[in-house]
Image (cartoon, rainbow, N blue to C red; front, side, top):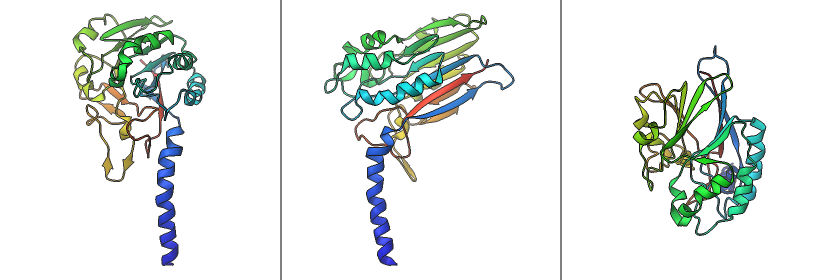
Length: 269
């Protein structure tokens, strides 16, 4: 009996690293959320991607699965909340990345913000050009108002990266005029509190990787992702914040109990 227990423990200890390094990082889980009063009609489908962090450990061909799942959702808008590259100095593949991101289709538009890794390793010189070539509008303390077919107006604003950029909530909100619904994009989730009291309905963030490795009674936390780590939160003024756990990895290229995520929001307003 003791021998069987020892063998079982050994197999478990061997299986966990294999799963964490080889299985879970290759997943792409779609999380769907409905926000707003259920009695209201569905107005807009927004799909969020974050923290792709292309590298030798997350090569561009791994985006093929993501492309299929994104296009299956038929989103109106795709948003990317930063960290396209992990370390640009070590892994570029710009044209391949452009082709993959360009293959992701949205009926209205695609928007992105800067992440801290998009500034490092020389990425700052190419990030915006790569995203623009893939039909993403990069919002840097800026925003755009979209008029839907029913006449309702949706504002999408984007904050510059809060670690290596020059973020300005005030500047971002100057682009916002008349609107029915306001979506703000920021890479680091803990800065979402700066939007409290600004009549913002939804803040979308990434950066945390959801901790990337989640163990019992312990969760890895990242700077500016210590208060808000993963999933849906309601801020003090009822603003909704969603923290996407990202697709790629950094530092240790493993995931455990935090699978890569595609988040989809069906908005009613």
